[in-house]
Image (cartoon, rainbow, N blue to C red; front, side, top):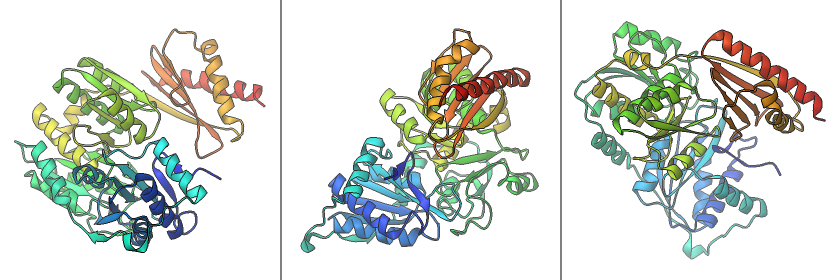
Length: 453
């Protein structure tokens, strides 16, 4: 049987491989595994959300769990409330930044962290073996609607006090932040204009993934209205993209690095966690202020796990998923927006000025077709032969694929988890250097593929 859970929970096409039957089974399995009396459930704005929520809640109730249905909420708010309200588990129905025909179920532990592989595997095994615990009819759980989002607003207001009240334009993309994001930012004293703030699970305004292509019209609006900053969220609010006062999308890597540098400076050092694909500008900014960078596999759960294990001060991925462990362990777009405003306040800078201090490097990506049967063996062979092509005595990491740090850049070779390809990512201090590293990398992968049968 194929693996049900990925790094972001269950994810699939609605009524194809993610059905109400499966949602009910996940609910029954979580009730049996967690043995908790209190579970929170929330969803994003997708049109399939209510259908899946009803099935999921039915499964939880049948296992004896009491459910507090939080309705439509951003994922990080559900994670925060799971810990704040002392629930045994929190289940979020969302496909995050994926297109509207997808949905998913993400499970959070009582500490606000998404279920790790061990917990996910345990739940999946219960589903596979149909070892559900169905309670006696007298002990079926109860469900009630609950809106505790005020607790999240209070948390942000306690953490962030702004001297300068900026003019913000907020684009929720018809997703889960449609109401709460404007509320939170206005509560900090900012002037807020909300765009695409009507909930609509078909995402008619733009793609639920906030990238340069989907945000081009929004970027023009920032300039036309004379705003200080534009803030855009993905479908469930765990990612954020920033548009500066000139209408430019802030580079995700450089924004992450700039904020990481600020936090490291404020804390006089500390560990910052990011993944193997993030730019080396993160190291440049963190090490500048006496900090250290730890790299993990791609996936926010791996970043969260490392943050907690290493007692890190901050972490994130270069897709706008930033994690602030002093509050909770889930990537949080709205909290990141508020904390970035606080950083701009403390630095007395505009976003362009803050990010301009971060070096810009050149990045290239290539995909090489390779069968699913061979791709992992090819990557293993590459890792064995790397030193023959790159003889420099630099750091080699096998955390996720194989990543070699060089004096003037780095190269990452990974087997795709979803396609029959091997992905190469290269970053260098100049485009010429980057191309040179990529040429050597492609040649090595092709040679290794020829040796692996």
